[in-house]
Length: 254
Figure (cartoon, rainbow, N blue to C red):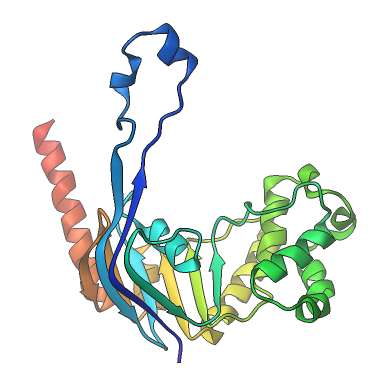
């Protein structure tokens, strides 16, 4: 039985601004920055949450609410600065596809290395390399160092590796756009298959219909805290009411 459990979990970043030429040439220019050096930003605030086997969880909220940060924390990219995070199950994160490459190595080497990074054994990833290469449709480009790839090619390669592995826990951030219409259609079909196979799905989305259609639970994040947790229809309706109310208040104050 796979699960994700957060017990009073906090994630805090300390802002460090790099000195720019502008800071040196224009005295006092730092005061225009949104953050001061050393200021702490609380991305996740004392969060308590358990995601059970079989749940399809949508995460909604405005930009900066902590949605993508939550995914990065569960995947192990970020480590909590407080509380306890327990993740039981094999995790695959479908986000930030174009990062984590060995740029001097060719496509084949990166398939192998990325597979190991995702928890495959050497034997397992070697047995999948031809299938991954075929799905990516990169052909002879796989023999070239990936530093010569376009961003779309890097996304194709990373997506092809990540989705060749059957995870217990699938973390997905928004939709995929990685090439021509035919490849996107093929990629969406594979994502649907993965979502059905995974024991737990955590989906970050700005699309309320997507949350209702694909998920059986929804949380609304607001400034690193859970504002509401429950049925996707109820949570998305409450969120949309709040957004409409805020928009109306802004119009009145103009």
